Length: 439
View 1 (cartoon, rainbow, N blue to C red):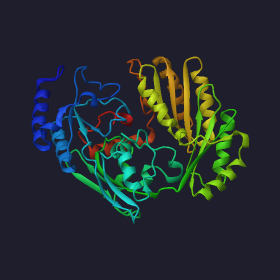
View 2 (view 1 turned 30 degrees about the horizontal axis):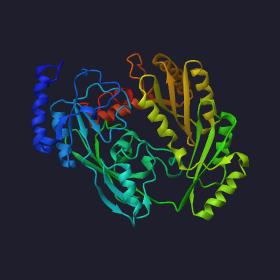
View 3 (view 1 turned 90 degrees about the vertical axis):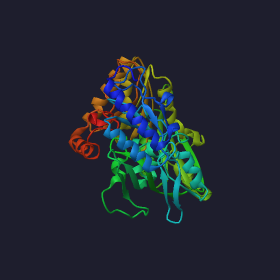
View 4 (view 1 turned 180 degrees about the vertical axis):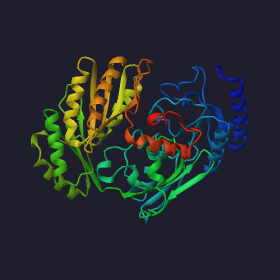
């Protein structure tokens, strides 16, 4: 019996567990234990309480379990690899942790059509290794690829610097299967790249944080693996020069796959550019890049620099007592303005490191006292939102004094988002309160 809750709730939960065992097997229903890593904890969850972890083996089992939970008025937190359970606001309730770990198959790889269909629990690393055998890839560079799953990456819309050339996840996904709270398995999209008929469910659920349904499988467009790859980096004297160089690279005829600027405390900003081509193509691209930069400042650091975003997230999650990680979305031409505003806001209160992609999407890691971090982030958020930019807090101190909303101002889209939530999940079973506007 869970402490601090009503006998009626415990009875509903017990009845649900018994029914779930008949669907997924008794070994796949258990206390969540260390699999439950939400920070901060759900608002109505007792310190000693843990959700029940359910691990279905098929889409049909998952849909049945979700329907059971919905009928029993139990809240459900979908879980993939568990790498991003802390993202978003704390859910209002967390009764069931619904894992996709056993749904991990690559169901179809149509290599001649450059498409692949994969179950939600498949890790990005597993998918990469399978596709590489045919010289292909999903052109995506999310955080923690060895643990992050396809469903989790889609739900959080997590993409890195490759987005510059290949687009976001909404550009790469062409089909999806979704388990809805009423037990329906809804399918949308197709297995061919040009399929555009019907309701665009794949794009809708990408980035919805699992609040509309649980993704069970997805179909992606693929790209060929590059023949060769090379990263070129150069130092800039200050943020203004870094921005100027980045814009010059973007305005050139260079065919680069990714570009970013790293801002490390007490160091000069560094611009990184990734080229993917044949060896002859790489030589030509690098030669052209050097005409835009000071030759003596150009170095070849290798591919490790593209882990900079992940290092900021890892630093934030490793030390939750006095650090925060946030994403900033702005225009590439305003990166220097944002960094200067961050320096002013965090002066004597917090230390700040950042990585900005050429698209204007940046990751910042702040270290300081929780109250000071909340003040700095709120100050920057107000400034950004005034200019139609945004700041989303992903990792925050575990201290209860840090009460900053993850999402900020939802804008005019909130009524439409709430209407969609009502249509897909009228009882607010999935991730209640975790998404924008308390959805």
